[in-house]
Amino acid sequence: MHEDHDDLQPDDPLIPDDAQSIEDSPFNLLSRREFIAGTSAVGAGLLASQWFGPLDRAFAEDAGSAAGGAPTGAETVGLTLKINGKDQTLQVDPRTTLLDALRERLQLTGTKKGCDHGQCGSCTVLVNGRRVNSCLALALQHEGDEITTIEGLAQGEELHPVQAAFIKHDGFQCGYCTPGQICSAVACIQEGHATNDAEIREWMSGNLCRCGAYNGIVAAVREAAGQMKA
Ligand code: FES
Ligand code: FES
Image 1 (cartoon, rainbow, N blue to C red):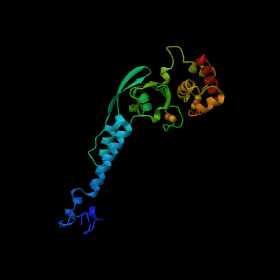
Image 2: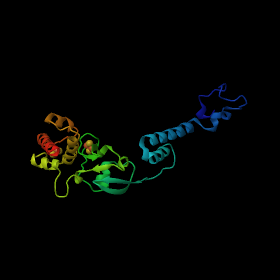
Image 3: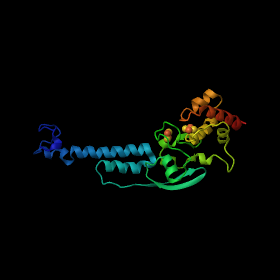
Image 4: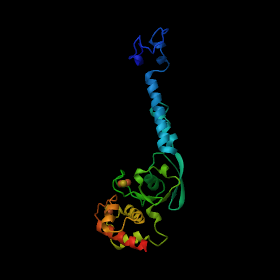
């Protein structure tokens, strides 16, 4: 008996009457193992196309490869990101995070990598005015979006009010968390979540500071909120 048909019995209703052996059954056209491998690859491809939109081709190829297809090698895709008002065209592995695209490919190293797991907020950038942990976002997801990093906040030599307030109120010590804190503060104020200290602490709580410069940060956000409102 074929090893892939070991749960079929000679009197199985799925075996035609005129079959001479288990190998004549419909299952012999495609072994169970081949069938499962094939459906897994198709299923993975469909899920990838539903969930990831522009990533579907790359993920479907990955799924096919994982199911035993020929290795596809290093796949890259072209994309254009709009960063600080400028279009930046680059070729990336589809798994590249927005953070790595910024730092490693575009040399925008103001955005910091802390935990790389969405826990510290040091990688915060603004995407269409909303705060995003760029370590958790794929670069490909943000084609066409307006991305603002710490490098894009000042107007020429003039600092953004939040940047100026951080300097005035000693809102940093080592400065590693500061670009993320400032980007987050800009959105926090624009969201209307900076009306008092308790609210600022709550809505800035996704940005950690290992130096503990929180008092200065809160004072800076409070003052910048007043200025931006005015
Ligand atoms: S580096 Fe992204 S949240 Fe920590
Ligand atoms: S100023 Fe050092 S981590 Fe915040």
